[in-house]
Image 1: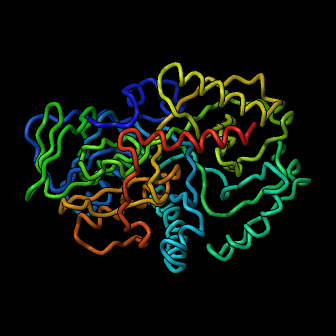
Image 2: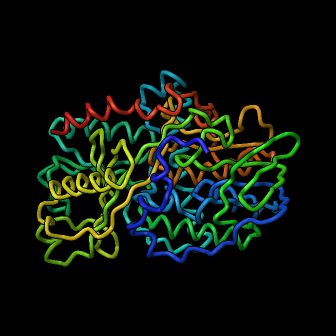
Image 3: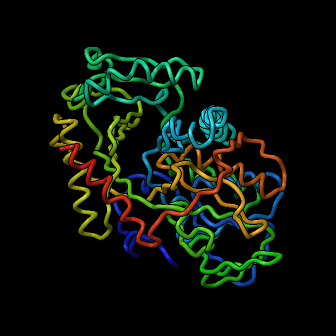
Length: 441
């Protein structure tokens, strides 16, 4: 495999203390062995692959999912569990300049549809995913940011047809959001969930519909020509169609088309022990809204139904046991600065995972060039719960040679270009990371 990060990143270390791992029953799927033939082979058992497998199986296809570890092992089982608008990191101006205003508005409608995709799956399949939060709240960390919230609210209403709620700084404590913030803006779209319970729920539903899963079965080779021929350590697979759903955990040679088209970056999370009534009152944070602030290295956080606080942030350019420990100290320092009354509260859970950035900062779902019958989806820019689930449904329709039943905007149809510097492309992030770090000090 030709991966961007060192081997440590793809091993058990970064997820060893992941809170979600102890909250869901992960299916024990067998490894792939011997000769296997199927209609569609799916590589990756995260949200994209799970959604694709479910929709394909429900359509009567013989689908097999090949996962290097187990369901939800990668980013899907490590993220913050925010099912919300997003999927692109491009600004409105960038989207308008590169794709046009009509395409930008189609993208906004797709963001809403993606949240609806997840809600419909949870409701239809009866997945107990510990959902909470009425939409998503952004908090201003400077007076200047707060001053821009009125215009931001107007744009949200124009783009999504909903009316956001603006909470001025003086009313934040009454709303249960006391902290170093100057205003809050809630968009009533989306909800929070336990991402691993959602992932395992999708896997169980897909299995019930006829999909077959293989854990501990990393795909090590792909060959195309009429049909697809895949290899794992103990199996040889032949498939009529292929779906690649590996996102930030991709390899530049599986298939070769992926080379340089994604940039994996780290996101880091800590989770506290359950907080007492006294501790919640002392800090003045009692809302169960999923929240984020408006920094470049945004913080994202939410008080979960069991009264544990989840706190995450972007950042981290290097990966090793030593660097992971350093990043955990950094995120803990940010947590204590934002919630000083909880400086004594233990955070027994801490982990990191990889999300993916595209050169144009927009996600892709569509055919793999030069490999007829192969499809891929990747680069959800840290908002994969909704958009990856939606992309999986799109890929299922493409593999079935039928028009997409899900909103499929032009922005998602545009294949990603390639980042410069090849396997050294992580260096692209050093200047903006250094700039953001200096600004935060």
